[in-house]
Image (cartoon, rainbow over all chains, first blue to last red; front, side):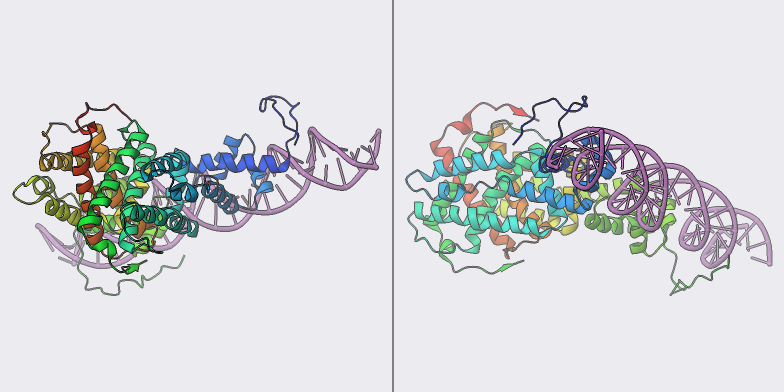
Length: 228
Length: 228
DNA sequence: ATCATTGGTGATCAGGCGATAGACTGACGG
DNA sequence: CCGTCAGTCTATCGCCTGATCACCAATGAT
């Protein structure tokens, strides 16, 4: 691949980049743009930010909607490092450590203004990809967390956690997620130390889980009906 | 042009409503409309839904933006029943019961598609009213919750909880909030029984809080720096 | 040097937007 | 019965939007 390091623009001497590279660059910048403006943002303003004219966009993408779809794809799929499942299930390490590391890297990946805004915008549009992502979180992360928690406190590990258990994990997950929303979307003051927030949240969750697993029967209840 | 005899007026007998009533009706319907379409929704489509023509909106509101501002005001201020603070602080009742009741009524108020969508849309716009709301939740609810938790486990009740404690309460609050987002925005399957979700989340939180208050010193640390 | 290919542009279209102007309708106090 | 005035309409303005087209410019294989 002929890598060019020449500074952008300003010089006609600039070498022509490969179509694929250019396209990727467009998608990346478009992601930034739409994350700020929402998907109602205009193609002219987008083109201005890219330093090109508006009709050029239509040489690379058939329509604005197709461009937006590519934005979704990269945003949702890029941060999907799938070492997560193995990390969560590696019982040679203390569960607390595993969870700390997992939520550390997971939030490193998604706690950006760009990612969170695209995620919320697409959620508000009711897109399938959003529901797919939520289902993925449930199956790949929360189910695993519950299983490890049950193992940790000596409960039998079922194949499928109950809906109530999953919901418990969702409250943890959503609570951590909401930290990012408060910081990067609402731009409210938050506790500076993200790792401490995660660590504290996990301490409470693990201690609470352990406690209720001793004194309560509901964890062992049959799967509860869910509605969608 | 031919003068059109207006075919409307299915019920000529219909009494003319007071301007104020009509205005309120417009705002209410506009809230529904914008919650679905986002604030990019057009005035023509809105008027169609109201059963009137588009220019009429401008007799009631100087501009689309003014209408939107009124939508914000009603959405944010309507569900503010301020019995909350007293409810949370009423030490004649068990803390768990108070929290259950509080989160029961609080979520009854905000877990609607309409409220949540307007809330998220306004958050994405970065409006001040959103930050104001978040600050209000922190001061009126979370601070109170932490204070009661400290009292419950026998810790000295400071005037101002530490930032780390508030963050802990935010994880609980955000976790519960996210249930509503998953159900009404993402329309994902959730545990049917909202009260059970709340009850379980509180059980874990209270047990966890109690536990870490015994074994950890961080709760007594000096207030931690926050950034905004 | 030639010439097809690709990158890029200005002009423009049809349609939608928020907002305004002006005329008609009908309820109501005198 | 009349005059007033709010409620509502049709028609329209200027602007912005996504998209298209014809055309020029740079590239690179021959």
